[in-house]
Image: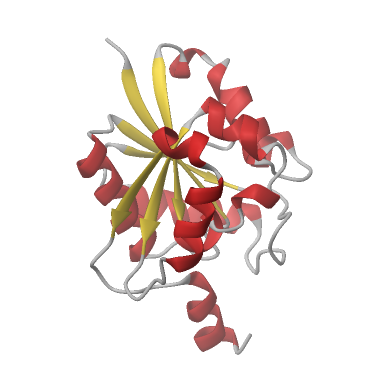
Length: 179
């Protein structure tokens, strides 16, 4: 039987309940067997993380501990260098735990709106399905235009709306550290 695995890439700088909630929502909506949080090593489209890789991994371990179906994948940190989703997905598809699986890449709408600026985005969309999580108050107009322009990828993308609290790592850092 084919397993359905989620990949949730991000800085997790810091991980927060919004990340956990989005993963649980994606699992429930698409009946995923397991979700792997994949903290990036070196940002390409964002500022470098405030917390070190070791600190972010430790925070993830603590946050995910109560959830048997949530785990951490260190592929990007162990590989070193710049982190690209397409490289990670290609690597994971070759690993024993990921054979005979359907992969779903979980992503927030804010990151998804930049997907076509990612390295080999068309290849990435062909390799995996995307679960795009809309946070409360998100504006759909730009995303709807993207979908209209990239109609060939529509069957690879699932949209789920998170009616929970609107939480963002950026706002947590701004409130905590003033930047």
